[in-house]
Length: 263
Image 1 (cartoon, rainbow, N blue to C red):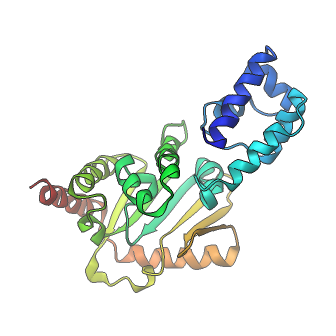
Image 2: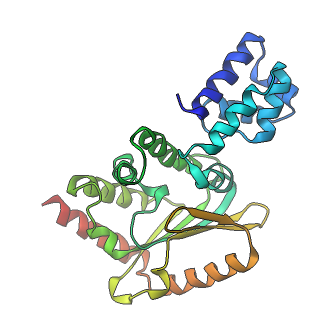
Image 3: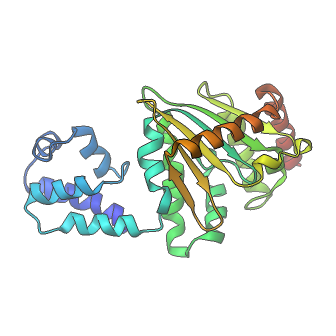
């Protein structure tokens, strides 16, 4: 059991042992009832403050804080934990660029597994796959974000996981391109797109107007709200998007690629 799953299981165990409802526990911990529910169901990663409140509520000597520290050191989400669990769910607009892969938010489990199988320890692969595919839940809520995804056209010809995995990924991408909150635009190889070859990155505008960016590096990645960093990547994003195909043209290109990989 991963530290995150153990945290969720233990929270429910101690709550029921104390004969508390989620409402009663949330009152004791001074947090929203939905947060208790999300943590118990594994949909939210607990914060240090949450772990400390849980220890106080059950009069435990650091049990949940210890689990929190294991979670924070786990590579299951790694540096991306803050983005996936705190930034994306609060976003009103997400704008991503990826020169090499289908964006993580739009990946099938098989496509994600093919990626993590070459970059993660074997015992961490499934945790990472589940963490990645779980992110699509942000589109199930009452106020889902608008997601603008720029993808390099060459991604359609890169058989990550093999032809069948890529074909299913493209079929899924085609389906997602019809989602009212998702816009997918391909950037043609002919555009060159030198400004975008440095790394993949994602911009987020939150409900309170805050702007945050995540950017990949060779070894990991970085999440920051630094004004200069955000401004620089916004300019870069606009430059890349200026060369992108319109959404309808991109949808046709995805359809053509599906035909190619179906043969």
